[in-house]
Each structure stands twice: as C-alpha cells, then as structure tokens.
Length: 240
Ligand SMILES: Nc1ncnc2c1ncn2[C@@H]1O[C@H](COP(=O)(O)OP(=O)(O)O)[C@@H](O)[C@H]1O
Ligand SMILES: [Mg+2]
Image (cartoon, rainbow, N blue to C red; front, side, top):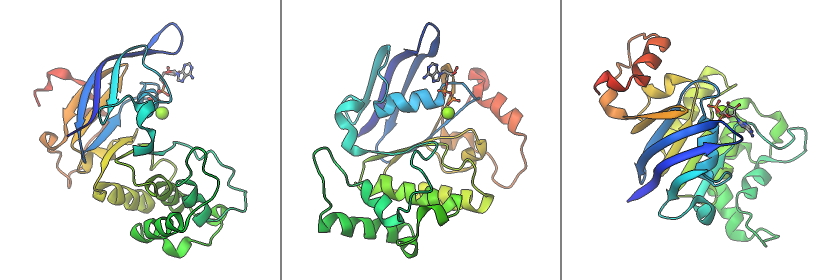
C-alpha cells in the first residue's frame, strides 16, 4: 500500500521556485528521512505533505487523498513548540490535546484511556502530572510525540525532532521513532539520521535526490566525514 505519492511537485512562495520537480513514493509503514542544507526546502516540503501549503504545480497524495482531506490520519510534531512553556499545563493535558477534533469540546473516557496508554507505551507515564515547563528538552519532545500519536495516525511527520536536545535524549528519541510500526517522515539537518534504519532518503536542495536507505550501507562503527557524505548523497551519479 502506498502511503505517500509525490508527482512533479513544484512550489514557490513568491517569484522563485523553492521546490522543483520533486517525485517520490513511500510505502505504508516505511521510514523516510528528509535531509539537505539550510534553506533547501525541507520544511516547505513537509508543510506541503501536511496540507498546510498547496502545490503550485503537481500532486501530493497521502493514502490516496490530497493531504487536506486526510488530516485525521496524519500525526505532526512541529519544529518548534508553539505553546508557551510557562503555562501551568500538565503533560497529560498536552497529550489529550491530540484527541481534539473539530466541533468537539470535551474529552471522553476513551480519550483519557488512550492518553494513558500512549504515555505508557513511550515510557513516560510517570511524567503525567508534571508541568511541561519543568521537563528537559528530550522529555518535552517525547510528550509532543505522544500528543501526535494519541489519535492513532497512520503516518507521523516530524520536523527536526532532535534539534536542541542532548545526545542521550537524541538517541532515545531516534530509537523510539525507529521502532514505531507506522509510516514516518523525519526532516533532519543532522545526518546521523542516516545511521538509522531508514528505508528512504530524500536529499532536498530545491530539487530532490532520492536514495533507498539500506543500499547506502554506511558502516555504523566507522567515523565518517559529514561533508563527504553529503557530497556523496547529492551526487546523482554515485551509482547506488
Ligand atoms: N513563508 C515563507 N515565505 C517566503 N519564503 C519562504 C517562506 N518560508 C520559507 N521560505 C524560503 O524558502 C526556502 C526554503 O525554506 P525551508 O523550507 O524553510 O528550508 P529548510 O527547512 O530546508 O531549511 C528558503 O529560501 C526560505 O527563505
Ligand atoms: Mg526547516
């Protein structure tokens, strides 16, 4: 089953193309990393996949429908938290927000059960009654992942989930994402993501170069130069 189909996608905010002729597909339950330089168009591509932006040309389908018509099955973890961290709001309340739908003004018992279940499955149930402002960056990120998962999406999209988190927290979050049994798209400027079990890599710099993950076969135990790896990935003629 195809989770994502992107065909001849072009996008511009104003006069200049930000994305040109992007084409890729992603199968159900696969893990895709979107990498590339700053300003390359990664966040823009994610916003198009989420249906927050509309293609200037071309087509995007998420499980066979335009993203805007399929919002309920998309879980989203934004790049920067958009709620004030000084609010006296608890972890449990934040996770419950993920159960909100249009025209729904209260939480059912089922919503609360799902929130508990999700916190337990991510091993952060003990944080339930803590205020979000008292958590570490890594813990906060896990809570936002819980909020995205509590509505049981078929696809999870995340923008820079490990930025501004300490190395141990980064590892925990990537371990977590790697083990989810749903479709995942992760934007990252940190190419350590490539050492993970990704099924597909899109190198985005206005245009896209798509790589199948496992064929890369990057040795996990060797030190490698990030710049060389980036050069390698963007070279369409690299023969992988
Ligand atoms: N809202 C916007 N209006 C106009 N230009 C934008 C907007 N958002 C991003 N851009 C431009 O689009 C390009 C791609 O940005 P972005 O998708 O944020 O890249 P990345 O996430 O790879 O760093 C950049 O040149 C950026 O300046
Ligand atoms: Mg970005």
